[in-house]
Length: 116
Image (cartoon, rainbow, N blue to C red; front, side):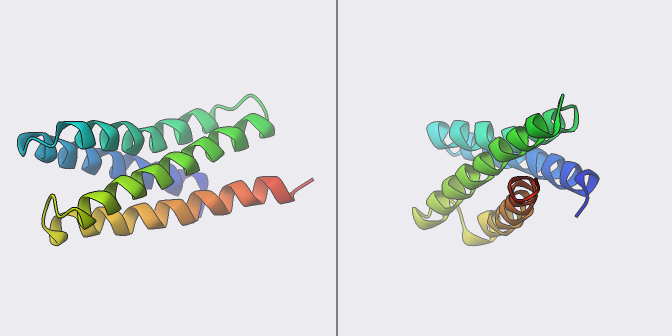
């Protein structure tokens, strides 16, 4: 995966998270919607910041933050699913995409930590 694919996937994911968070707010799940919105949109924001990193170290540090935010987002989505706040068919596609982002970002971060 190239960085541009990562940017595109994380941006598209953020748009979907915004829409899903709006649905959660409409159903009066304000706190969890807020947490999900924050972490789900932060993934792409940190990927964008990484692309303007001042050094390799800065790039990988931002990607590591993005990876952590993807994991947090995955946590909130699993919590929404397991607490049955919404139907499975509404949350599962986002959950699947969050797993994919975690894998992509972890791979990028591992690349940076193994290269000397």
